[in-house]
Every structure is written in structure tokens, then in C-alpha cells.
Length: 401
Image 1 (cartoon, one colour):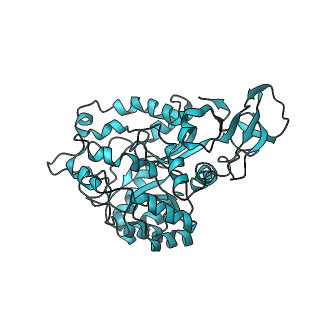
Image 2: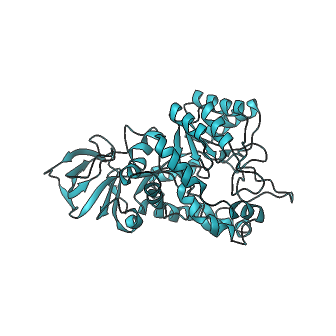
Image 3: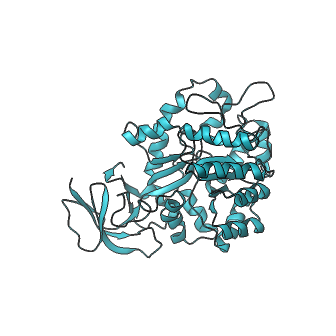
């Protein structure tokens, strides 16, 4: 296989070091060398451009679309429609320079396999399959009418996530891993987009979360926790989850617990951009709209305090709560609320790789690592226009965009 050199550009290597004039040489799907004056069989002219590692989104739902908040329409569509639409969701994600994702519920083992074998062109993924939820919690599809909602529906390879009690949650962890989960996703608080629960209230007792974490660890998995309310956050952190996702009402005690224990924050600030729009949408259930009307943007202040305290942060968006393809808005919001632009890009590269346990193979432009490379026209720190300036996206040495 030929040697390809990206030459004449400025390199952001993912470590947080300043941009440097350098070439990047790849061969056989791996980075061979980074430095000046490199030669290859094929040259990619990067004059006036920046060269970045492939980006990450550590909280995304590739199988869903923003349009799917119209649940009535979804209930009357063919069951298989989302599986065909996922190709477009993946295309939009790759176009942002995102080559690796942690899917936070919805993608199943078949979707992961289709990407790995090349039947679908998309980012590599770790999947959680479904979200573990207590009865009446964020992933319980029960409705007062006696029907069930459009989300949370089980099918072969996608078990129900509803579970309760020490034995029940342990068995559910094993069932979800049997279905192919790389990571266990739980709801340790209620959510905003589910009609019957309160995002400020904890879901699962602390002993239940401990049982989830312990069972997952026995089988070599980490736990990521959807958590808005302060008590749900703290229960999850004390129980040993790997990451708190959202952290909307994160308080000072929770921040200190996360800092002491090395718990990651995945802030999903982008999701807040659509709060007012969803609250005004008559196609969304009134119980959901009511929760969103007075929400505002508390997650921005929570992120500022966590960033100031030195909590570890990895980039994640919760797309499609904001549409797929808007993922890089997360960088802009992080940089406007406590992070430097360099810190935001680190959160999207080497830090995200570390969260996912992939730091030995991805996240930086380092010899020996997988050749995920993004070429950007102009300044990579001008985040407001970054999505429009992604020129090339390479995954494992193959150009996909």
C-alpha cells in the first residue's frame, strides 16, 4: 500500500500543543511519521490548511433524527425506516470530521458490524444498545393510554432497558452485553424528553447503580450515566460510573466528587440550542414541552464551574436533539463557556479517546496510531465556521469525505 503525505499545512496533534508547521505521513492505515520535509508516493497539498486527528463525539444517537420528535408520525411509519435513514446521519457526522463515536442508545450490533465491514460508510462506534432505566424512568416507553411510545421499543438485538432492584439491574447489564454493548448506558436521573419523569429527581438507588457498575466491570465494560439532577449525578459518581453525560444541575459537591474520582463530564451543550424550539413544537407531547419552557441554559453555568475546577471533559453533543451535522457547535459552546479553543479541540480528540479507552490507537497524530486525519481550510479554532471548512476526512487511511 502506498505512502501518503499531507504536506505544507499546520498540525494540531491532539495534545494541546500549539499548531506546528509539519507533514503527516501515513501508510497501511497507520501514521508513520510527523515532521518537516516528509516524502510519500502520494502528496496531499495542505497549504493554508490545518491537519487534525479525527474528531470524536462521545454522546450521539445515530439511529434517530431531529424530525423524529414528531412521535405520531413515527408511530405510523414502517419499523425499518430508521435503519435506512442512518446512512444520512452517518454522512453528516463524518462531514464534521468525526470519525469515532460512542452511541448513547439506539445503534445495535448489526449497525456496528455494517460499518466495520464497509456496508455502511460511517464513523467507528462503541455502542450501548439501549439505556437502562428504572420503571417509570427516562427509557420506560409506557404511556397512560395503555400504549407505548415510539422510543424504547424492544426488538431482536434491542432488549428493553427497563429494570429494577439489585438482581434485576445486574441481569439487565448481562442481557445488554449479550446483545453487543461495548459500554453500559444508564439513566441515573429523569430526563426532559420523556413525558412521565422529572429530570431533577434521581433514578435508581445508589445500591442499584453500584450493582450495575460492578456487573459491568466484571464483564470488562464501563458505565456512562445520563444525569441531569444533582442527586442522580452524585449517586452515579459515588457508585463509580465512567462519565456523567449532560450534568445540567451539577452542583459544587458533585463537581468536587467528579474531580476527586476522575469522573468524566460529557456536557452535550449543543442539545440546549433546540430547547425553545422543541418547547414550541405542537408535535411534541405537552408533558415534554412543559418541562422545557422554563429550562433556559443551566448546563452552560454548570460547565463553566466544572471547567474551572478541572473536571475531565470529553466532547459529546446528544445529536439529534440538535440535528446531525451540527455537532461542531459543541466546540463553539465549550470555548465560549470556560474552555480555551485548544482545550475544546483536546476534548474532541485525545481526551475523548481516553474516555473511550482508545488512547493507544486514536486521538492524536502520533506515529503508530490509526490514520484518522482531518484537513481544515484556514484556522481550526474558528469554530463558528469550522463545519463549512472541513475539506477532507480520512478514516484508517481511507478518504471518506
